[in-house]
Image (cartoon, rainbow, N blue to C red):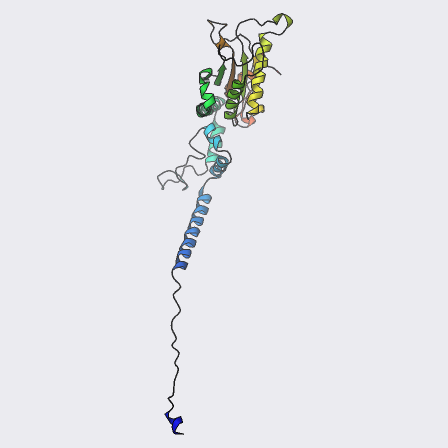
Length: 312
């Protein structure tokens, strides 16, 4: 009994502490979530405040980005602000609220002469953009750049004229034949790759010098030879990606249109001419009106001049 009384009494007390710290990672995740939601609602607001025509223009740009460059203009929409009214003055009520409809209404008020002037302006923008593109393709390609002296580009009233000329020491075709030389094939395919997204129609012409063809008494002359060479060039251009349905005509002109009239037998007169036509030139050459707006708004103006020497 004495030993039991001397035994110490032990009382165990459990101390309850706070939860362990979780750190601040959840705060970062929450901040990212709030930022993403804010960006999402801003995007929804922007889409809801943008005109339908501008939205279609943005979609068209990403589907075909080169189309904007070819067609001209500074982008798919010209508004400087998405706020209704547009512009820097936010107090303005009227502005480019529905740009697509305003352009359509403007077209309805335009006379045929004004429409043709607008069509010519758009053509010039496309022609200049295409000229820059072809020039950049030639410059970037070491092989084509080597033959730059035989490639001539000019903007004419008919459109962009690309001429591949013969050289005394570097003929484009076998003598008296329409068989394309290998280097000529490279030139044509380089040019054809630059014309893959061309919107305007294309005219293709073959030229010879004034030297009489050896078998002309048998019916095959420079006329047939120039036409065959133009058609052989057409095949190379199409093989490189140029749309075949964009060809308006393939013509053999023989020696009727020399590049050097003072020297009709010069090698430079032997050439292939690729012309990206303006709408006006297409109407004049093919003898039909090319509308740029709905047909009901156009006054038909047929030409009395039929196309000449079209090879079918």
